[in-house]
Image 1: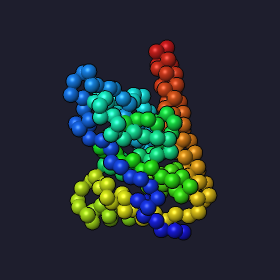
Image 2: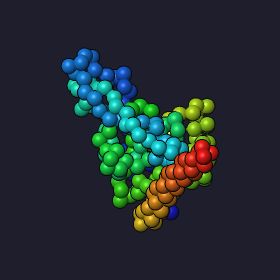
Image 3: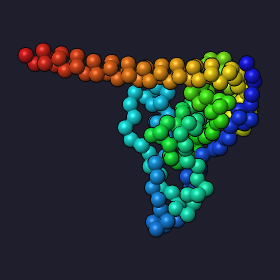
Image 4: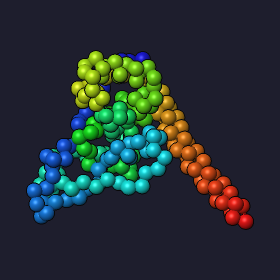
Length: 197
């Protein structure tokens, strides 16, 4: 297994500070979808459902300097320390300052493998926790710590298999939760019917 620093195989950016890109007047205003903490929480299975996309008002003249997501990018929540892969429906969304964007070479690092490592691998999480606590007692992951992360990278084909399994597992868990919620609603409905007889 190769040990590689993340900044050697990926471009890493911190999201936009909203106050710096806000419009000065209504004529300069553009509304755009942006990635939210709720969306990330839904992706990693903390929230059971997600309905509303977040919209942000941005200066049209500053759009060119804004960071937008692309398909296969990885978004890392700097306060939650969770990661998600940007799939087609999440591409072209504004990234705000509480997130980092990791744009990888998919021939060197599988995005889903990275998310498994970042979200689920206990050894990796313990190592990350030590780095964050070692630099300062803050709950936010510093962007420089993210850039300097050392990853144990197996062969890309193994990464893709692990990444695919993780993605399928994550989706299955969400479906199981949805099924359980629907079963609970049906049972409650039936019990209320019996109770009202």
